Length: 597
Image (cartoon, rainbow, N blue to C red; front, side, top):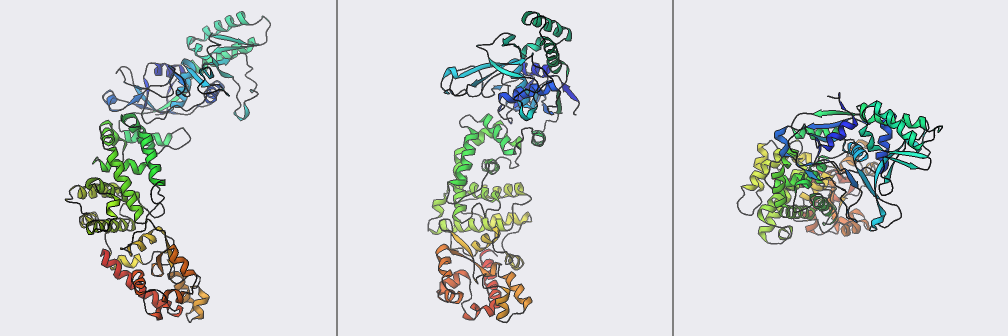
C-alpha cells in the first residue's frame, strides 16, 4: 500500500540502527554532491521526491540473503588514499532486533539524506593529483541560513534552486554555525537536535544574537530557513513507500524492475549478477562474466551477440541446477557451486561458441542463443573441444556433423521458442545419460518429439522450407544444411542468386515468352531458396565477370552436384527459368530429406 510514510529524520534513524539495509541486487551509491544538495533543496521547496520500495523481510528469511549497510562516510574513490571512509557498501549481519526492511528502490535518495545529516562526503579537489593526499577533502553538508528563499540562486540554471546547500571541508569548518563573509551556514545534521518547533525559535534567537547585528536584515531569513529545514526533516513525511510483504524474491524482483528509479532500466541479469558478486569468494563475478561476454562477442572467429542473460542461464544448465531463470536459483549454495565449476563452464561455453562460428553462424544468423547451451553441456560432459571436432577423423567428423544438423534444424524449427526451459531440461536429461562420446542426435530428437516439437524434415516441412527468401537469417541456415560437407567458419560465404536478380525481371521474362502474370510470379520465386546458393567471395567475383550461361556452363560436374543445379543446359536458359526452379526444388527436397528425414 502507498499510504505508509515516515519523516526523513525517522528514516535516517532507521538507517543508523540498521533497520533499513540494502540487498545484494542494489547498485553502489552513484550520486554526486550536487545531486545530494539538490534533494535537500527539493524537500525545502516542497517538491515530491518519488515513491520508495521496501521489502519487509521476515525473521526466518534473514539468513537467506546477503545484506549491506548504508554508507555514512562516503569517498568517491578509496584507491589513492588511506581512509576510514567508504566507496562501497559493506556487508552486515542483522542482529535480529527490530523490524528489518530491505530498500529495493530509493537507495540513492536515502543515502543522500544519511550522508547529508549524519555523515561526510570526501571528494578530490579540481586540478590536483589523485595521489596527493591534500587533494582530498572530507566535508560535511552545510545550509546557508541567511539566503533569501524568495530568490533563485544565481547558478541554479534550469533547476530553480532556492535554498543553498554546500559541502564544506571539516578541516576548515567544523562548528555548528560557520560564518563566511556576511553569510551564516548551519551544519545540516545539527537540525536533528531540534525536533520541536519551540526549540528552533530558541536556536534562531541564539544565532542572531551571537552572529548578527541588531538591525541586520538577514535575521528574517534565518528564522524562515531554520523553520523550513526543521519542518522538512522532522514533520513532513517525505518518505512515502510501497512495502512488499511477500517473501517470493522473484515477485520482489519484478516489482523492482518495474519501479526502478535510476532512469536506466535494470535487466534481470544485472540483478542476478549482483547476487553472484556478493557471494563469490575466489572471483569477481561482475568482472569475470562481463569480460567473458566481451570475449565471446569480439575475440572468436566471428562477431557474436551473446549477453549476460545467456551466460547466467548457461551456468544453471551446465551445473545441473534447476533450469528456470529465477532469482531464487541464485542462492548462496547454488552461486558457490557455479563458482567452483566456473573455469570448466567458461571453457565449455567458449568451445561451443567457437564450434557454432565454425558452422558459419554468427550474430546475424544465431536466431536462438539457447540452442548453444546444450552443445556447451555436451562438450563439458565429454571434454571434447572445437579443435578436436574440426579434425578429419571419422569419429570426430560424425560428431561434428550431428551437432551441426541438430543445431541448424533447431534454429529453423524454432525449437526453443515458447518453452525454452522445458526443452533445455529434457535435452540435458538425454545428454547426462549419454554413454560414450557420440552426440545423441536421435535420442534428443525423440525427446523433442515427445514435447510436440518439430524434428527433421518430411515432405510438408520441406515444402515450407523452400519458401525461405533471400536475406533472411533462416535462409542462410537452410542453405548451410544443404552443404553438409562444408564448414563456413574460416571462409566468408555469400548468399547468391543462381540466376542473377538483375536478369530476372518482368521485362526480360516477358521478352522470352512469359505472360505478365507468369513473370510476376517468377520474380517472387527468384528470391526463394530454389534460386539461391552459397558461394565464396572469390566464386562470386568470378561469376560477375561472365554472362550467366558462360559462368554456369564453365563449372564441372562436382559443382552442379554440390549446389544441386540441373546440369542440362536447357535449364540454364531464361525462357526455361520456371522449369529450372521446379527441378532444383525437387533436388533440394530430396537432399534435405535424405539428410534429415
